[in-house]
Amino acid sequence: MSALVLWGEQDPWLAPAFADAYGQRLPRATVQRIEAAGHWPWLDDATVADRIVEFVLG
Image (cartoon, rainbow, N blue to C red):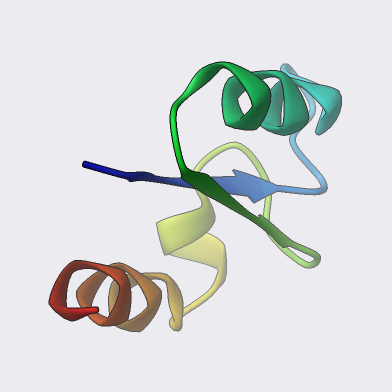
């Protein structure tokens, strides 16, 4: 099993460093930072759903 960590670079509440921390602690994790997104990246970047589908379908 693997994990996908998507993180908005512009998140005002949780720093992007948290994405790296999650990635280091989850086995076989893929971390993707989304440059123009905030705390709810799926609202800021229309590609988030596509990224999730691509990851799941592998």
